Image (cartoon, rainbow, N blue to C red; front, side, top):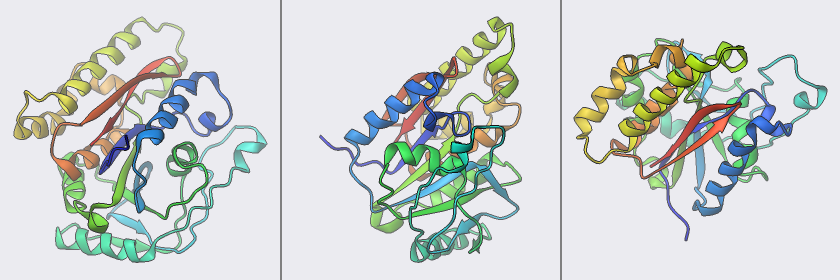
Length: 265
C-alpha cells in the first residue's frame, strides 16, 4: 500500500558518507529505501537543506541546477557524484508567490545549485533523479517561529502533490561523534530524541502545545548539547508547519553510533 506524504524530515548523515558505503550510515540508507518503497510518487520535491542559509528565504529557480560539493577531505569519487534532477522554474515561482503572500520577503536565485543536503538523500530515495526539485533556503536568523510560518505558507503546494523534504539531522554535535568518552553524550542524545519523538508524534498534545514546545526546543533535555547551532533542526520546524499536526509516522535509527530520527506527515 502506498502512502501519500506532504512533508518528510530526515536526518541526512555526514557529508557524502551514506553514498560511499560507510557502515555507520547503513541503517539510514536502509530506512530511506524502505520509506521509498511505501511512498506514493510526488509530482515534484521542495527540499529545505540545513546547508543553505540566506538573509531572506531563497529559492532555486534555474531549469538545470548544478551540484555543490560542499564538503571536504573525502576520496575523489565523492566529488564525482552525479544527480541530474531537473529544476522547476514554474514551481519556484509558485513558492515565491506563497511566501510573498505570507509576508516573508522571498527571492529567486537562478545561480544557486543543489547542495549535499539535497543530492545525498535523494540519491537514495529516488536514485534515477526522475523528479523536478526546487531547493529552499533557511533564513539565517534561525528563528523557529518564522520557519514554521514558511512551512505553513507551503500548504497545498502544486495542488497538494508536491512533497516538502526537510533535510537536516536530529543530532548534530560534530565533536561528540568522535569524542573518546561517549557516556554523557549518549545520555543527552537519548534524552533529546525521546523529547523530540514525543513532541512530534504524541496525540495527547494540542497543536498549540506542540508548536510551543518546538519554538522553545532549547528547554528540552540535552537540547544545546545535541544542537550547538540549530540549523540541522530547523528543517523539521518547516516540515511541521506544512501540516501543523502530529507526525503520522516516525523512524528511529542510529547514524554514526548516535540516535537519530525521521518524521513523516
